[in-house]
Amino acid sequence: MKEIVAIVNAYDALDHATTRAALATVVRVEGSSYRRTGARMLIADNGRWVGGISGGCLEGDALKRARLAIAQTKPTLVTYDTTDDDAYQIGVGLGCNGIIDVLITPLDPNTTNPVHILKSCVEDSRQTHVLLTVTNAPGVLPQGEIIRYEGRDSLNGLGDEAAANQLAQTVEEHLAQQKSAPASVTMANGQTLEVFVEVMLPVPQLVLMGQQYDVYPLVRLINELGWQAVVVANPQKVSQAMFAEATSIVQPDAFQTIAFDAQTAIVLMAHDYKTDKYNLPKALATVAPFIGILGPRKRTDKIFAELTAEGLFTGETDRIHAPVGLDIGAASPEEIALSIVAEVRAVLSGREGMSLRLRNAPIHDHP
Image (cartoon, rainbow, N blue to C red; front, side):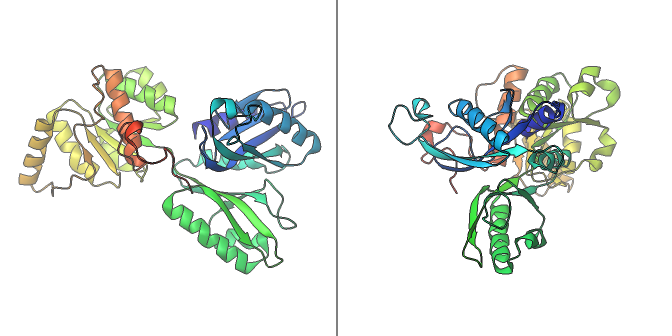
């Protein structure tokens, strides 16, 4: 989402009277590539761009193709095949070893275009959005058009009930798996409708229950990632810097007003035993899939025992990560922040957080 925010801000800053632009989107990947489907790059006809579709091997060529698409006011789908050993093939030098389809769409500022739709998603960032980018639909829909999927009725514009039903079923399967991937259906006229189904989850949100000095580097790291940091603390006990850096600061007695979802992690880091003990049942009452507790295991076990004796803890520990963070030998507040964020990312991604050299599968899941 951070890249999308940068693209939206850059597009809004353009002087559309003098500068035209296109949006390049990775819509299909086979094999290995530095960026995955959904990676985007805003390209202006003055040669400037924001975002990226690769590790640097495709951007130069994409710029040339974008200028041509802008001049022709026509979208184009470009396939980069870096599996060939030809030394002159774009991307081979960086060892991408994959096939990447990139859709380049000229942007008309006077009509609803893809960036406008992305902006609406950014403004509603705590919702899951499903976007269908048309990559091929002869005689049905313009190439590059984006459908904001909100249920089967979103596909009525296809004018083909059977194809719409089939596509809706496929989209719902991707949504259930929280996976973005290309999809295709055969229309009644025999033509093939091809779309890129993009599932945009809410950005990770960390709810930090504490106000000590180690909250600050954690908030800064969260900001760098483009995530959201909600600090639960007495506003009178945090510095002005925290007001500037945190997404929001919530009074402890207003904890229930926070919007919790499947992309929310809670970290108890008050450095006060009674406070963390008081906050744990409140955290467990939410739908947050990750609850971290800072401090030694012995301390947490004592909290569990006391809450159990008081009838406030049922023994649920699947969501609880204590001590919070990955075992990276962290010592400083900054390193501890890194270990916490890394564990949150691993859990929300359904990963183990181990060394990639030990993974007996591709780094990225393939559709």
